[in-house]
Length: 276
Image 1 (spheres, rainbow, N blue to C red):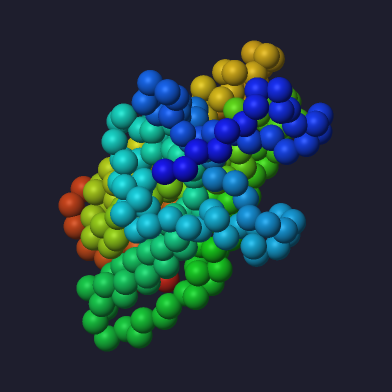
Image 2 (tube, rainbow, N blue to C red):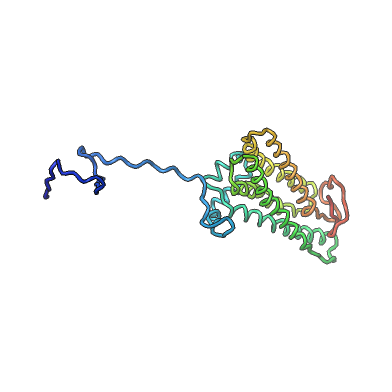
């Protein structure tokens, strides 16, 4: 190996080329490794403005296993830390969108099936008329509550100076929180009044607890203590949603009641006896 001798007095002019060695030092130790870069805690939005499709593409980049995990964990009592545990490193919009869309079709199909079953058991020869207006009602009700409400809440909290979560996280919490209504809508095809009230009560309790447990810590971080009262408004709106589901989609029974009668009485309905 050849060596080139360089005089000690030979120096590069100021502003000239400078060389940096990436080899180890004379003792044979390797150069120190650069500091590790902290992981990104939130998914960055795509390129373009928020009105473009490219802006929202990263929020739909999620695998099926993650979506299913985020769905069924909303049913567990330990879901109070859902934001930090299950929406980390980043929330998504794919799961909430399909959860709400599936709920819309589950409400309409289960209601139509319950109506046809009630009509057949009450009068086998009577024609079955499906109310497609319920589909538009389900779309308006579910999307308004699952998408518009969290966005409005997020805007209100931003105006109040509370920035503990993002708009995507707000929509994700509300969207995934409605997952429990999908199996309840399917089970409410069973024409037993008391059973339907129990199922609606369970869904109301689980989803309501999930929302309050994840939203209240954010409200509590506000400087104004009165901000915490928003949780009462959320609870009232959620109770209104549960009663709307019960009255509009889960109230078809046969003329001859099966099981214990509905505690709130009965009113004539389009298929058999419509009770609420």
